[in-house]
Amino acid sequence: MSSVAADLALNPSGEWAPLQTLPQRPIVFFDGVCGLCNFSVDFLISRDPDGRLAFAPLQGETARQLLTDADRQQLHSLVLWTQPRAYRKSAAVVRILWQLGGLWSVLGTLLWLVPLPIRNLGYDVVARNRYRLFGKKETCRMPTPAERTRLLP
Image (cartoon, rainbow, N blue to C red; front, side, top):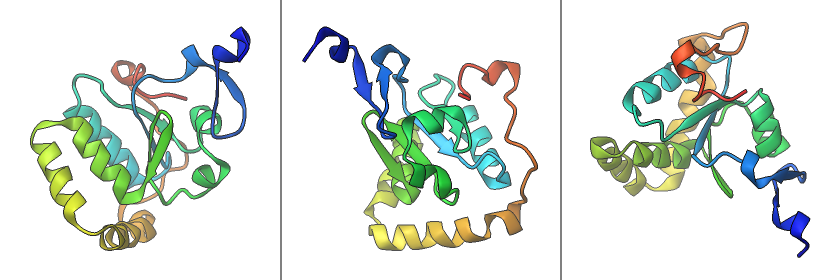
């Protein structure tokens, strides 16, 4: 491997990106115009004071760089990106809870014990009805000044 290639990593879009530009912490990708998703981001930020998680809308530049086209076009699934892997739907929720630690980690483990098809069925029911139940915004969520380092473009 050449010295130039050693400093690059292939992202899921098939493009080479400098290693130092790839985020070092897990990123929660969410539908930027979904009311439930925005509530979830607020919930996670308030329970993650150490900043273990970063956040980015599925409609944004970070998603274009790191996720596949299918992930970005299917806005009904939350995606947790941890280099080099992406988790979707209830698997993402479980791993996000594990990242929060403490009692949330226990809740994540209990949720993980539920068989994946049943977990994803529940996830899909909520995802299909989220706009109707929680509303849809005209634009993506704008970060507060305190959140700017955690919300990626």
